[in-house]
Image (tube, rainbow, N blue to C red; front, side, top):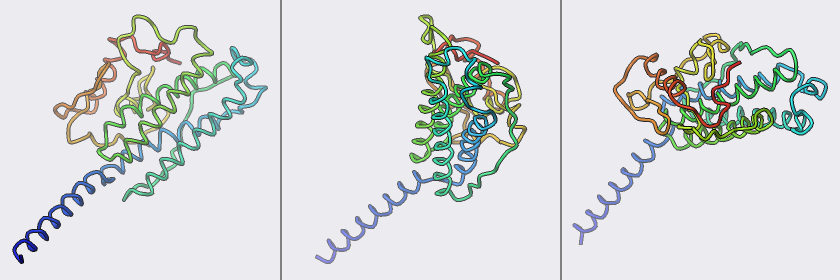
Length: 256
């Protein structure tokens, strides 16, 4: 009987160790600190963008479809949602070991009137949505990937709302790609065009480490892990998507 008791204790101890190891591998790791920092910068950038202009009825009056789009109420709501996004990343960061929110001195695209502001908002919202889609592939923690997926959905919804009052066709019949996703290296590039924010981040934000020690190559439908390459080569997977595919929705290719 003593032998069976000993075996039972060993089995229970092994099960507890297995559960502890499994739980530890799914919790936030030190490598997530840079991922969270990058994710925080995306939300904080958009929050500051909406605060950089007077979002009031006078400013929005001359924008296309301002009355039918109920721009004043909705853009004030978008401001609120962006602040909630910042708060969500801060709460995630509070559970990480070394996350420290830093306030960058961002610059923003200029907007002389409400119409230009709406176009800029569409560009930035869709870019940040694509950045969060890709960011979900840079962590093994369910807590982090859940938030990045949620924020990707949030900002995609924002972009679709704006686009629905700016364009007649949102889903082209010749589309060969799902909603675009942009790797950190691509987003932080100083290039112009859709998906790039580096020129506004002023070198204040760094890309998180590659997932699992390998490069995440982003395609039109899926992403695959491959041999580790330079940041510029990794970013080119996002660039090739824009160059070779007609993304859905149609606003994905719009530039300033």
